[in-house]
Length: 401
Figure: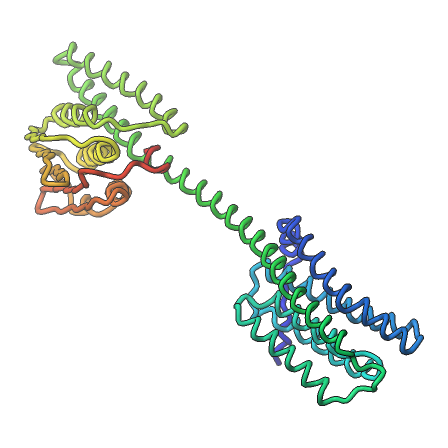
């Protein structure tokens, strides 16, 4: 047996929604309560008291109407918390039952328009679609039809002035309730959006730092490892060259420390000329013969991205191959730059599989509208990148790279 689908919202989320709404919720609540008291409770209670002189009966009328007001305020919190009408519609059930009970109980002394109007206010809060105005108009026509079909005693029948006043209060109150409710709901949605933006910004910053650490420190650590290994091999035969390699490894270690600080502060910028010189020097120190063809070089964001691509490509070569011949080309063709770096001595086909390094290259290239491709044949691996000549200005994320 299925339970009745009553809307449920955790207590913590409920009060957090109210707290986030802040002044907008106070304004919306004051607007709803003001419309109800001024347009329904006060005139209705006065009418019942004047006709019956029964104070407890008048109090019951006021209590039932205010109970509908609490249902409206409760529905406002649910809507602001993001619950759609398909989850909050059960709130209309008690509101409708109260309206029907008041209509029947006070038929002899009071018009049912006020209590039926309360159901319309609840729908104004719960329904997002603008079709709600058609629903409200339908409720108004239903009320008029009810007054015409269900004859009321002459004493309780509203006069023309009361009908016009009720219509004006209904229209003004409906617009006011809709506007203030919209303000409260949008305030909560804006706060939730700001929280999501903050979370995504934090995630983006963490991704930037991890990617930069992988690209920059991975390259530097491989370079330090190779230079220290070379210095160890040369120590017995060529002591002077071994000392030069040791000093180079020491300088690179100090540079790595500075780059770590720059990465943490988001001020690290890759230099294409420096990366080209470092790549050639590192590959030749590994014993590879480099064939180089460098034409016009890009500037700005394109040059910075290409510097990162070159650094990561060289790191992959040193990690996954023992190159004998390397080819490096950078030429401009029309409105784009074409970059190619290839090497032989690939250790295994698994080394050419996409990983963090190649994935980082693809992400950087695609961010500025370029294309990326990698292919392997036998023991040879080739990386090709095409970048637009007039690349976009780096955004916050790219500028930090």
